Length: 529
Image 1 (cartoon, rainbow, N blue to C red):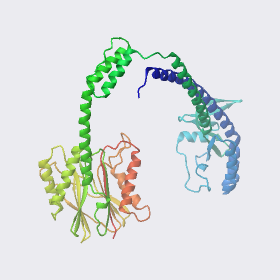
Image 2: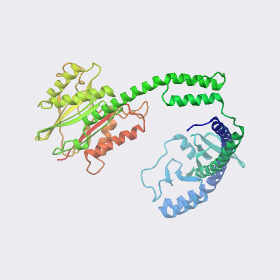
Image 3: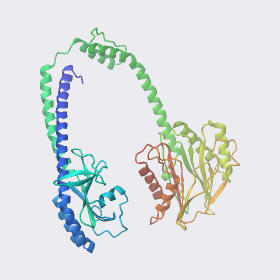
Image 4: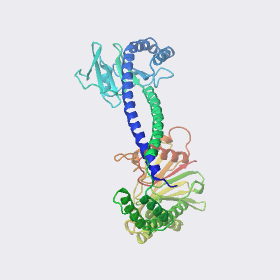
């Protein structure tokens, strides 16, 4: 659809009027918001001073005597008198929270003492003066001076007054010789009023748009010849004629636009070629992703083995990941499993992981796990780049003898949860990454795990302990070990799939949306009998 200069002029003037209206509305709303915030401040302060002795009296009369129903009825009456108060706490002068309306909704709290540890808050609780805390964490004490208040600190030294419109988090009011009452302020009424004003401003903006359209229609001029040339040139360009040029002699903005148009036409062909190349690379990358997806077993492809419950999954950091895992069942005698992590991630790591998969399938008939690792390492060292290597844990479940063995090639330690002991431990580490040395026979060792009924064994890539929540704090192996132990003991029979899902959820919750820097791979095994 063609858009004329006339239409653009109409739009520009309309937008200008809308901007003016919106700026004026913003100033007005901010002024009213400040005014309403100050009203809430004064009303809540007066309300808190008025009702604090009553709340303390009712606490001694009812709640301290275990009459929660009567006390709760009185508290509802207090809340009905001021909708700007969201929560009330009764706190003793030693910092013990005796009542919290936000938590103690059904009965009197009878747990361990809820002691306030923050020293600044304790000063507010113990002070003879009314105090408050602003939404930006500033604490101020209010010393009465006739019918006014002086703003002071805990030592009653003068401090800067509150700015107009300051939002308050809570007030602390000394009620009697035993308690202070904390009133938390809720600004939902303020925000509701602001919403109403915003709607009115929108109506004004609509009126401004209509006014702008009328004004711009009266002010608009006919389309000029240079613009016609630009339109014709654009149409030719849209048809694929990249040699199109426009001849504009003017030195104003239209002339500059013509020069820009000519340069754009000369660059467009190169851009089209670049796009074709990009599309080809994207297609090849999608193909690589599909290939890797076929190499990684899904839940339905995990072998069903007697006495063993298995769950596994992989979340790549890039479209093509560098982690690898698989299961190889040797007749009905044993199950070979492995989980590895290729250096880096992306296409190169995905290629190495595919090679590693193929090698383990080729050497899986070896009876000795050490020989499998030695042979795979020899090929990787000879056929891959020296900067690429694989940390890997190769495991074997002896179906006949019900025994679990593993060999580590510089991989993360396994987590073994013992249902009998009710605790989890990290199994011995060791070995060097595959592909680093020509011969790893002296660096690897077959380890045994006393895998009993009800036990869990968790294997993982370093993407889990190295999952970051910020630039300084990572998830860590110890947190993983502790979570596995706590979850396994949390009550009820847990399946391997449940343990896997719980671990991944805890890792995701810990990261809190922070960018995933490495592939995350997890394998969980539970012995069922």
